Length: 181
Image (cartoon, rainbow, N blue to C red; front, side, top):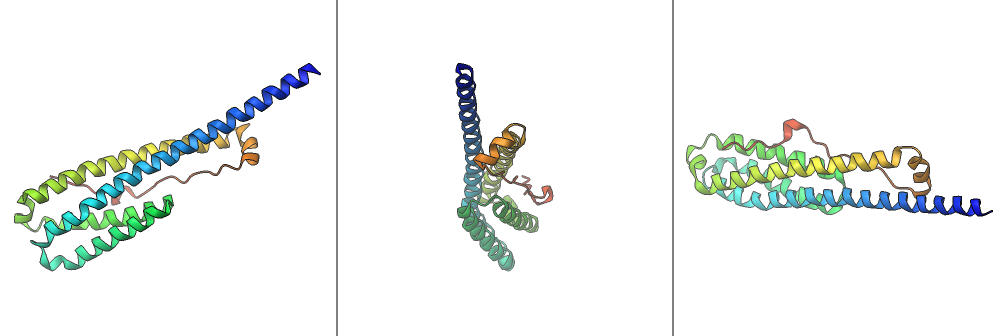
């Protein structure tokens, strides 16, 4: 009878250990998503300054600047939802417009030489690097968490605990903004 209690005690301790490990990993995933969130907001804070710097030089690019402003607002709204797939889609869309803006800026030598514009490009390049690093950290944590809940015997326990897999943060590599100085 004592052996049964010992086995049940170990089983309860094991369940507690697994549950706590699921919670810790889930929180790591959520924390790493907040890292992406912070960097995207930082980039979005730079965009109005970038638009103002470009506006004075590229007046006939008004449509592009309006599109950039709309995409920025759309991403900010999506960030509030905390839906990884929607955020990734909006991020990809905004990145495409930013790429177009930098391609257009090549046609304006005075703009390319403007110190404010160059400073904004430097800040944006650093932010894009940090966004990429945050995505890698998030996706790494998602892979660890998803694997943890799918491997045996954790997958059996997860049927009781009902932890859901997380989506990876994926965008087309061609849509990543390249900021050359």
